[in-house]
Structure formats: structure tokens, C-alpha cells
Image: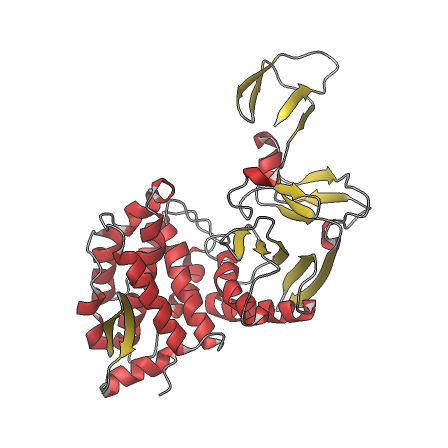
Length: 403
């Protein structure tokens, strides 16, 4: 941010405190300033605003003064280069004028080639915008998103007011084939157009199983506190289960993914509880938030399915969470623990791994469920026992095992 100045007729003293932070000696009615959005300064383009000659992403929280963000809906005028567009659902009045209802979470794509479509899904308004050219029809993306949204509407029992999916080319070449962020009611997905996906729609469905669940958890909850272990780690596991249920991935890939996560978990020190790791996620504890929490979700799911003889599972706890806490502003960890810990065994598991510092040893835990770990070339394979018991086979079949 630069060239910050007051738009008042009377001059006002403006002091630059730090990069992007200015202070004035009295209230002002208007300000003007410039923001440079060069992509070479963005380490993660899915998290920040950026522009190139091909288009870009604007996040209002990056561009607006803090007080404006807290004032509710705002009117915005976009003066774009010739031939550039906004998504059509962003301009309900006249060209390039828009009302931003939630400036803090608003994400907008702009560029010379944007295709849009809208659909009603069980009362939910789904808006989709694609920037650039892609090797699949827009209708196929909408079909993929609809399939996953229906699954999560059923899972949570909670109806969203609206959902938006913005797909644009990943602007930076590197090791990533895609990046994504779900902010408010918007999923922003950036993909390298040259990505060598086996099937594009299959990959989109896999991404949607994770990112679309964030529209509910945490974005539709008012819980307070740090509970990243649940809305990241448990979401990763629930997305994996959903991908199997929708036949997007095979049961073998379910096993392979969990084995890879276990190897990644073991490669890092484990000294924090999941609650502590959530509090320190942005200072080096993100591995536990993702890897350990996902594996704890796996163990929790196995335990719940076994205790109930396959009649209930982790997925069923989401409806209870929304039924009790959808509109309540209470401590997140206490609320989630109360929903998940509905039996002595589940409470003990949560106490050990979420609240406590117990290290995961899947090799000592999974045998009772019909799994075993097998070292293979320095990595780990997650396998099914040769002769599962009747109870173990019931559990395995409930997870998608069909041999």
C-alpha cells in the first residue's frame, strides 16, 4: 500500500506506522491509496490478492481499511481494463457496480475470460465462475460440486444460504499443481492448466470433498477458540471417507493415504496435544494439526463403528454438532469434545490424543480392527488382516472394503 492520503478538503496529518498501516490525527470522510498486487511477492496465491495480465484474485480483506470491513455491506465500483470481466453474479445492478455483503470474507476473480453458471440445490444457491480455458465442460464441474454438496447437506443436516466456487489458473509455476482456500461462502481453487491429472473431474471431486466441507466447518459455525485439529485434521479424514463413499477413490487409496500420513507424522517430533498444536499452528505446529489429527480421526471412526457394530460412525457426529451448536458462540473445544465424547471409550481416546500428549502407535492399535502395518522399502503399507473376524469384517465393509 502506498500514496495513502485523505480525501477531505481540509488537509489531515497522516503517519505511516508500518507497511500497510497508517494513522491519522482525526476522523476523515474519505481516503485514497494504491495497492500493488505483484504475484512475485505471493508465496501462496490462494491466500492473498494478486493480479497478472491474464487476470487475478481480489480479497477485500487485503484491500479495504479495517473499519470498512466491520461496517457490513459495502458498495464497490470496479474500473477494469478493457475486455476484463467480473463474474456475472457479482454485478446484479449495472456494469462493474456490486454490493459486497461480507467484505471480510469476500473473494472475487477478475480477468478477460470468465464463464459463470448458477444452480439451486436443495435451497442452496450455487454460483460457479471459471477463468481461462479448461479441458472439461463447466457442466461437469457443477455436477462434481453438486454431488459433494449433497453429501455434506445430508451429513450436517444444515442448509447453507449460498456457496460459490471460483476456478482460475495457478499464476506461479512451481511444485504445486493446485492450491485452494475456502473463505466465508467461497471456495477459491487455483490449478496449473498443464497439470497431468489422471482424470480432471475425479481430481476436482477429491479437492471438493475437503474444501466444500469447510463451508460448514468452520465457516458456518460461531464457535470461538483454536480448534484447527478438528476443522483441518478431522476434515481431511472425513473428506477421505466421503471420497470412498462417492467412489471417487478406491479403498486401497484410502489405505495408502493413511499410510503416507502415518509416515509423515512419524517424521516429525510429537510433543504437543492437538489443542496445543492448534494454538501454535502458525508457529511451526501445523504438522500435528494435519497429520496427527487426521490419524486420530481414523482411530475415532474405527472405535465408534466397532462400539456400535457398524450402526454409527464419525460422519454421524457432524449432524449433532450443528443441531446443538450451529448458532452458539461457545468454546469450540468444549463443544466438539462434548459431541464426540459420547461413551467412556471415545472420551478416553480424546483425552489421550486431543487434550493429552500421547504419541500415536498405530502398529500397537490397529490389530484389533483387522489392520496391520507392513514396512516396505522404508515406507509403511497399511494392510488388511488375512483372516479378519466377523466383527472386523463388518467394520471393514462399513468403510468400503469389498474383497
